[in-house]
Image 1 (cartoon, protein in one colour):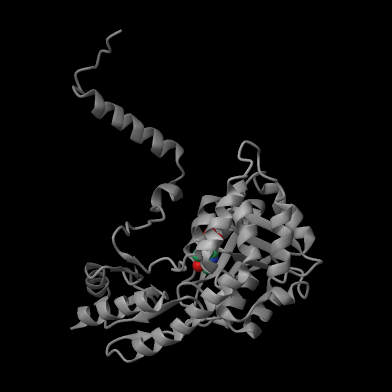
Image 2 (cartoon, helix red, strand yellow):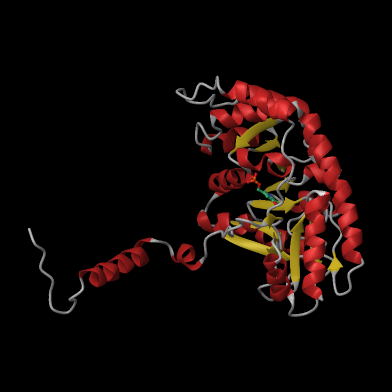
Length: 377
Ligand SMILES: *Cc1c(COP(=O)(O)O)cnc(C)c1O
């Protein structure tokens, strides 16, 4: 049957769009409408130094062995919901204390989401220092909680007095501490973290996404505090495509969080591949050792460039400051020369004039340094 439109809107598409807008405004929460989606820039044709990926691939023999393994993957079946074999491999290779519980996530992003969903109440909050990993705040918003960001000091260390004060007055349900911190690259002071653990009534999650590059960990200290949990991911280690993170802590917490996890969140291919990769962990240890060496070399090179101030890093990236007002131009100049890094300096605040580069292979780092120098000329 033909549709009839009233005379006000000759254009059916226009009236439909108005209606669509009204519906969206009515149903989508204002705080969701207000944020912009997590933006992943197009990197085609560029050297990709924006996302802390490991640049190295696997030896051919290992790839062949892996392909044979995957050819037998029972993809007609649901995955093992507990991923028991993979959990056992992780326990062994990551020195997870026997008495602690483990929960796997589709990346540690999903673990942050699961933790938040389990504690979400409109009057409760999630806290982290700022600047830090943006997903803490985004996920707090997604689950309808408030987010409390406590600014780091000028050296990007914890402002411990403000932090303790904020914890005492607000008692957040969860505190996330990225260790080392992204995007600043530093490790927070362990004594400060101890104070936080003592004062906080909520869960304190030490996010060790960059563990492979840090040389320090809280994993061995699990059990010392009832509210301490440690989260890691295999992404920065060299397996970002698998989407696998793990949360470790007292069984009581893990059992509760595990109820919120969707049953088959770690797919069969990821389970098999991660287990295979962990059986070949020395390849990854060698790659990350090489990246740590490259980090020191890149740091020296950046230190020698006039107008560039790099910050110390215990991760596989380096944050650096450029001269005032130049971050956009320098970011674009480097990009025009074929290298994509991350521009942190678009807004005012502690990261104005800052850029972040992933530490890669010697060859890619060289391309970046040359692009930076040519841009500064
Ligand atoms: C990259 C990153 C994550 C996310 O890791 P995935 O496992 O890939 O989701 C978590 N925390 C920090 C601090 C990160 O930098």
